[in-house]
Each structure stands twice: as structure tokens, then as C-alpha cells.
Length: 313
Image (cartoon, rainbow, N blue to C red; front, side):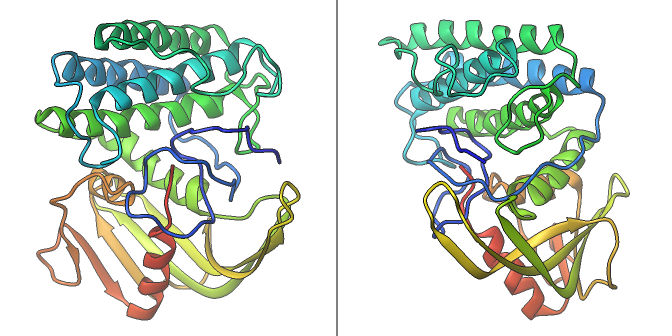
């Protein structure tokens, strides 16, 4: 599977040396395939519009040079341009489906000239966000459309871009010093499944995942959803650059498996923002008072923690 050249799409899974600030844009290598979306497609579209609208609202009067706490290499203007570029790219992917970014009509995210003024950035964001929502609304979610995950359907972009907008909305609120809007529980529930099953979990077609026989449970107290993470090893050689990975710690989100050796419990919103490292005040620990509580085998949890410490761009 080919990774788009010079892409910076928030949410690509990686197999790279961990960095300090997961969730900010870098080039990355695909590491998993998609899971089935859990929400109705019109609901994803509603979230794209609502989260993008809040993102725009809080950045409108923000100091363009304000640093983004969760992506400290960026300022507010960079964050604004990033999401504008992402939404334009995926609007073009859906518009020119099933063409891939190799098609010059699509190109690469960030290829458009960046406006020089902050007002120009705001205008570009408005245009690009509207274009994304329009193209998605016009398209059949089951229609073929390129996606880096290998799940080549328009619906995959519905799902990924709803979470993209939600996570960067949190970035915008933190940057502007605005109150952080609580994550909607159903979207956060789906977000936990997406980040574990799509971003970190599984193996690309050119690799294999071998289970260790150990599982860790994830329990969302407000939605009642239980997920099961299988620990294991990943091996394979990337055909794009001939880089070989051998017995690297990895995870897979599975429907069934052995009894969990450890559990992680919290609300869907807390778990989603924790996985994306978007809540600096979030407590996580082994005590009953922790917002996200860990129980069971510490060694197994430490293995999972090391995997989740890898960056997501």
C-alpha cells in the first residue's frame, strides 16, 4: 500500500521512534487497516460540521502566534492552515474518487499556496471545510474512494474526518484559552475503537501480526462498551522502502480472545482524549480515584503503554 508523498494527515499510524508530541503532523508509514464504522454516516457529517465550526469559532479572535500546547511546534495560524489543508485534500479525494493522490487533480495535502494573512487563513478554512462537507454529502458512503487505510470507501473519510475535526477542535480551544467542550459520548466511544483498531492496531498487508495470547480489556463506563486489545508481535518488510520490521511489539483490536490480564476503565471521552494525549490534566493510575483506572498485570500494561507512546501524526 502506497503512502501519499509528503503527506501530513493527522491520524496516520506509524512505526517510528516515539516523539514527544503525538498527534501533530509528520510523515509516517501505514501500520494497520480499517475497522468498521460504528456511527451512522449522517451523524459523522454532523460532527464534522459542528467540530469544524467550533474550531473556527475559537480561532477567529485568537492571537495567530499563540502556541498550540498539544503541538508546540505549531502556532494558531499553523493549526488553522493544517486543518484547512487536510479538509481540502479529503474533499478532493472524494470529488475525484476513486483516484489516488497520484492523480494531479488531488496532489498532496499542503500543496495549495498558504494565505499570507490570518484573515486569509480563516477564509481558506471556511472554503475548504464547506467543500469537504459538500463532497461527502453528495457521495454514497459505500462508493469507492481512496483511503490510506486500505478501506477504500467514502464512508472511511466520513469517520476519520469527524475524529480529525474533534481532536483539532480540542487543540484550538487549548490554544485560545477557551473552555474545552466535552466530547460527545458516542463519538468518543467510536474514537476509542478507531484509535486502537485503526491507528495503532493490526498489521498492513505486507506484514503479519502474531498474538502473544495476552489481552487487555478497555471498558467505557458511560457507554457500556467493552473492547479487547490483543498483544503480539509485528513482522514484515515494507515494499515502499524495503525496511524490515521483526518481532516488534504491536496490538490488534479483536472481537474475542482470552480473559484479559489487565483492564483500563474510564469514560469514553476520557479514554479518547488520553489516547490522543489531549488532556494534560487527565489522571491515570492504579488507584480508585483515577479518572482512568488500570487494574491487573502491570507488565502487560507497560507493553501496551510503550506501543501507545509511539507518535500519531
